[in-house]
Length: 200
Image (cartoon, rainbow, N blue to C red; front, top):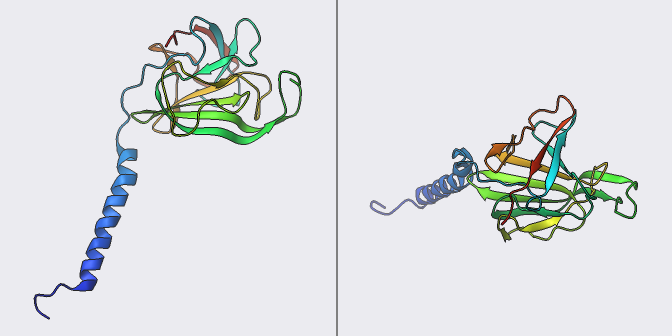
C-alpha cells in the first residue's frame, strides 16, 4: 500500500479546504472595513423642501420625511444613491390606511419597503410606501430613480417616508449632499428642514 494515497485523508483534506473557502466567502466581506460614505442625496424630488423629524422611541438616527407643502400621499420616493435592491416587498402587515381612508387601521412593521445595497457595506432603507415598490430584489438602481411612493403602510400613524442609512449593518446619522442631517438621537421630538439636490 506504500505510495497509494489514503482515501480518507484525501477526503478530509478536500472537506477542510471546502470549509475554509466557504468560511472565507461568508466571513471576509463582513470583516472588511466599510468604504467611504456614498454621496447620498435626499430620497425626494429635486428642489423640494422637506421636514426631517424624529420623536422619543423612534430609535436613534431614524428619519421621518414630511413635505413642507402639499399632501404627502403618493409623492415619489427616490433612491438616494445608486446600488442594488436587496429587499423589496412587504415587511409585517400592511394595514388599510390609504388616501381615501387615512384613519383606517394601521398594520405592523415597515409595510411596503425597499432596501438598497450601495457597496462598501453601505445600505439605505425606505419604509411605509403606499403601494408595491417600483423595483424588485436584484434590480440595479441609479441615484434619483423612483423606487416607490410615500404612503402609510405598516405601523404608521400618517403618510410619510421613514428612512435610514446603515454602515456595516448599523444605523448611523444620515448625510445628504455631503452634510449631516442633524437627526441623531430620539431623546426628544425635533425636526429640521432640508432641500433636495437629488436631481439625477
